[in-house]
Length: 185
Image: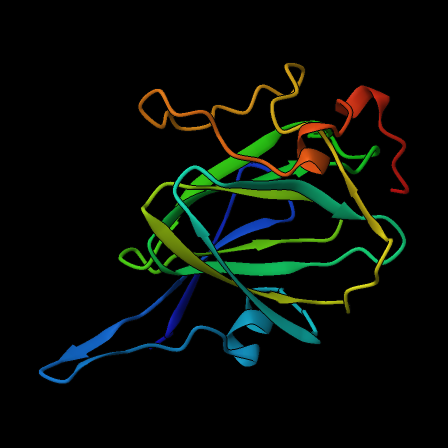
């Protein structure tokens, strides 16, 4: 019996990963990553670094990508919930400029694998959220790029925060739209 279910998204290179959760009177147990099962699904990632962040409601991180050292990312919320988004930046892709998003939460335990060549970001929906991600390349200072979180040409449908505007770093507010962004892909 498989412990991890992998579902392909409408955009090639994006996958929803759902672990089997084993519950009993003590709580629960789940495998969040299993190299053999991922390889059986055609996902041959080599993770080199784990990252974790904590943010409060309304924080929007992104949309980020790495220019010279692109990273595949396996992301999940371990506390709270986020709306997680990936945008296809691969110029030769049929889905270039398209986005896919889903809610990741401590409750649904879904994970999202985002292959190299995508911009990534998320909006915190709960009062607080802790977010973990495994990456396929190391962080390289100065290698980060980004695109505007609300680029009208992409048209991401971010969830409403009941009148609250997303909170972004100045850098994230000032990224350019995709059509004005130089991409290495």
